[in-house]
Image (cartoon, rainbow, N blue to C red):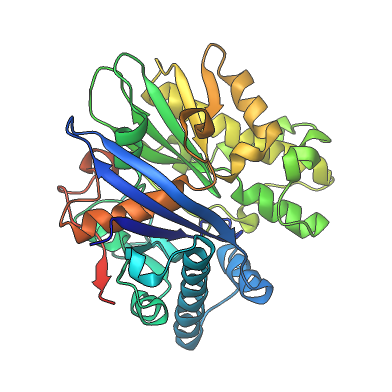
Length: 377
C-alpha cells in the first residue's frame, strides 16, 4: 500500500492552492521523517478568488444557494490542483494513499470567541466527497469540526507536526506560520508541553490593503510598507482590539480581521503607504507580544508560510527580537511554502491510521481526537 499522502490547503490569504505530496516514516526513536516528494501552488480562477477574498473581507452576503455553489466550486478547484500535482510529480492517482484537504474557511467561530450567545462552530467549504469523486483518491476533509465539538478551537492543527520535525532538546524554539493569520507553535527545550495559538493578522490585512489600492495581490518584498512610516496612533488603536489580550488557546481568521475593521480605526488623511507600514508593524507587535508573554526564553523562531518572502516583515521581526535567531524553515530542510500543505498530508495519514491529529494543550479540546471525515476512493 502506498505511503504517499497529498495535502491541500488554501489559507486565509486565498492566494493559491498549495499541494504537497509527502512520504512519511515513523522512526524507531519515535520521531518522524517527512520527505517532500513534490510541492507546488496552483492559482485560483480569478473570478472565484475574487469571490473568496470578498467573502473574507465581509464584502459579500451569502444565500444558502451561494454556500452550496461555493462548496462545489472550491472542491472542484482542489480536485484539479490534486490531479495537477499528481501529474506534475510523474505519479498516478493509484500512487497516493489519501488526500488531506483543509478546504476554504467560510467562518470560524470557536469556543472562547464572542459569538453573541451562539454555539461555537467552524465551517470550511470544499466538499471532500466531490474531491474523492474527481480524483479517484480517498479524501480526508473537515478536520477542524471534531476538535471544536470536543470543546477546542479547531486550530492551529499543525503544532504536533512542528514538534515532530523541528523541536530540539535544550533550545526553546517557536515555529511561526506567516499566512493570512499568524500562528505560533511553542517548542520548549525541556520537553514540556507543546503549545500553539493564533496571534492575529500576518499577511491577510496587508494583502487586502495592497489589492485595494494597487491592484496587486500582495506587497512584493514589503516594498509598499517600506515606503511608509508607522502611524503610532493608528497602531495603538488597532492594538487595543480586546482579542489580542485574550490568553491562549485562541484562534481567529479573516472574518474577524478584515478591512472593515481597519477602516473603523482610520481618522482620515493617512497615506496608503503609511497604513501598509502600520499593518506590518501590527503583525510584528502582536507576534512579538505573544511570544514574550508565553515563551520569553525563545532562542530561535523558525518561519514558514508566504510571509517569509516579505523581506520587510522578516527584518522587522528580527529587529523586534534582539538575540533571537529569526530564520526560514528552509534552514531546517523544510520548504516554507509547503509546510502547511505537508501538515494536511500528515493529518490525512493520522486519520487513515486511526491516530489523533490534535494536541489538547494547543486547541483546548477535552482530549486527543481522530480528526476529519474519510471519503473513500
